[in-house]
Image (cartoon, rainbow, N blue to C red; front, side, top):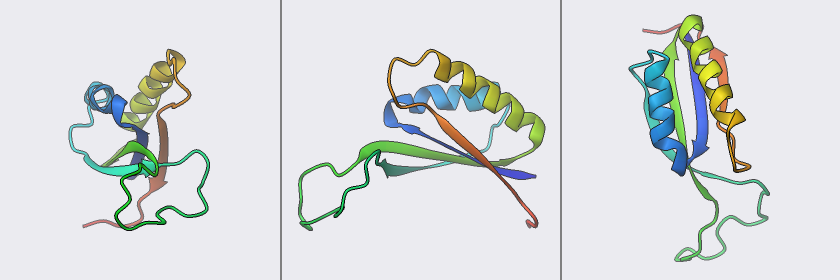
Length: 100
């Protein structure tokens, strides 16, 4: 059992969900995050700021096995090869020592 994390800009959310489905990873969670390419010195100088501080991104994560992760990463690599932007999908895998 491993924990896989995938991050991407919001525009790729539907594509990533299809990738997870093709990799036969049916159970996953998501959360909205802000992505930064150049870290600002101050993320929010004004509590009521209307300005956007980062790029809208999504974090996907799931507990799964090596076989499904291998398929997921192959599909992500294929997706990234055809990108016209500088925002590739990124993924990492962490081992899980214990779970209930």
